[in-house]
Length: 285
Image (cartoon, rainbow, N blue to C red; front, side):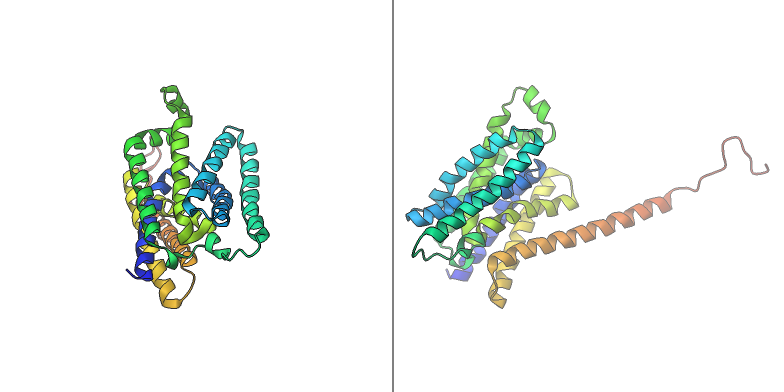
C-alpha cells in the first residue's frame, strides 16, 4: 500500500469515526469544549514526542487529565465555565509551544502536530483509528438512548436515576480518543472540524438522529476522500484541504437548505385560501 493509499484510507476512516461522534457533540452543545480539548491535548502529544514514547500513549494520558478538568469545569456556572475553558484552551496550546521551543535539537516540525501530515501515516495509525472507531460504535450502541436522553432532558435524566457524571465521562473520554488518533492526520488544531463539522452539516438537512448520523458519516468520509485527492493533485496541505472541504460542504448545505425553506414557505403561503369577508357580513353589504 502506497503512502497516498494509506492517506486515503486514514481520511475515510477518520471521517466515519468523526461523523459518528460529532452527532453527540452537536446534540450536547459541546463544540467549544471539544475545541478546548483539542488545544489542551497538544502538550501531551509534544511531551510524548520529546520523551520518545508513543504519540498515542502520551496524548491519551494527558487527555485523561484534560477530560477530568473539563468535567470539573462543567459543574461551574455557565459564565465561569466559558472563562475557565478559554484559559485552558490558550494555556494548554501555549504549554505545548513552549515545550517545543525549549527542547534543543528537537527535529519535529510544529506543523506535524498542529495541522497534521496525513501522507506520513503508517499501518499503526490506521489500526488506531479503526480501534477507536469500534469504541465509538460500541458507545453509541450501548448508551445511545441514554446519550440522547441526557442531551435533550438533563434534569429528567438525573431524576430517572441515571448518573450524569458517568455518561459524561464516557462521552468525553471517547471524544478525547478520537482527538488523539486524529492528530497524525489533521493535527491538534484542525481536528475539531472533523469532530464537529459533519454533524453541523447533517443538522441542516434533518433533525432525525439516525438520519443525521448517516449524513454526518457520509459527509465526514466524503470530505476526507476529496480532501486527500485535491491535496495530492495540487500538492497542498492535506489536513487543511480536508477541513476546507468540510467548510465548503457546510456552506453549500446552508445555502441550499435556506433556499429550499424559503421556496417551501412561499409555496405554502400561495396555497392558503384568500381571507373571506368578516363573519356576519354578506357580499351585498
